[in-house]
Length: 148
Ligand code: CA2
Figure 1 (cartoon, rainbow, N blue to C red):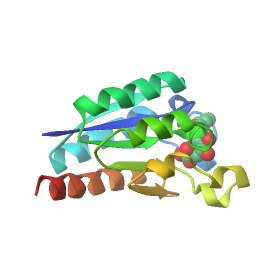
Figure 2: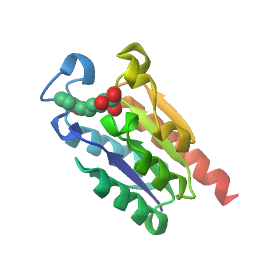
Figure 3: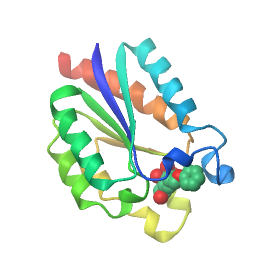
Figure 4: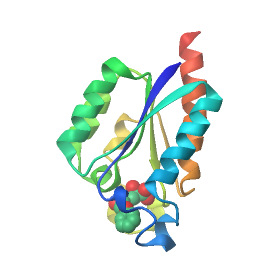
């Protein structure tokens, strides 16, 4: 089964515990369980990660070069600041799907710019945790297409 790394950036460990009006009531553990279930149904093995540290996210992306066929990433605040994460993703050969729980384009102006989008195959935002599952659907199609 193809392996997909699902990466989550800073503060997403607090999901479901603060600001539910923006980010929903589900915890990150709920999102992980849903991703593993959807991945299983699609023939994908989901490896789920969260880190509050930029360098650790970069190193996990480097590991994905050897271990994963695709990356789904919600870089959280690093979306808007991290050239390092963009560069690491540009060095990854497979599909990269960027996910945001909220519609970043309806919020503060600074959230409309994403460095990560410059390295993404596709971007999903504003659909809450369902966006992660849609990203896995897209990965399944893209990985199938690559396999020929
Ligand atoms: O909408 C998204 O998924 C974001 O990536 C979430 C980031 C934000 O900086 C991006 O602009 C959009 C923030 C993640 C923080 O998550 C929290 C969850 C619950 C409570 C506090 C923070």
